[in-house]
Length: 116
Image 1 (tube, helix red, strand yellow):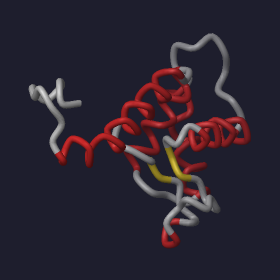
Image 2 (spheres, helix red, strand yellow):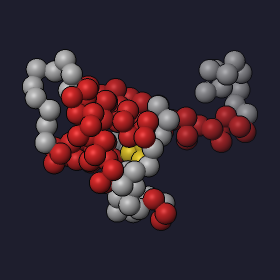
Image 3 (cartoon, one colour):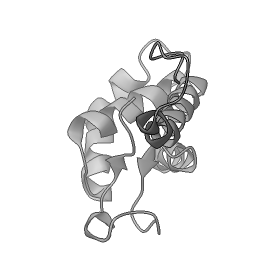
């Protein structure tokens, strides 16, 4: 990190920033490793912000054509889309309702877990 910042040694702020920088890099790599429909679904979550499961379902039905545009198969069911969201939560990209890591006020919200 010091090299990225043009230093020949570490400063306290480099150490303080290192963990978040590493986590952000891991999240970006995780997102890139997912299929295009996963990435498009993530973009919807990121764009619309924290929403309930019902609101996410409505957003999915509204945008599912765009999510699967250019793919060789038809859009998936809501259940499968929920599985996609669950996988993104496993990759620490989003927070799902009921997760222990989720802030109490956001327990019933699906939200983007990081800026990528």
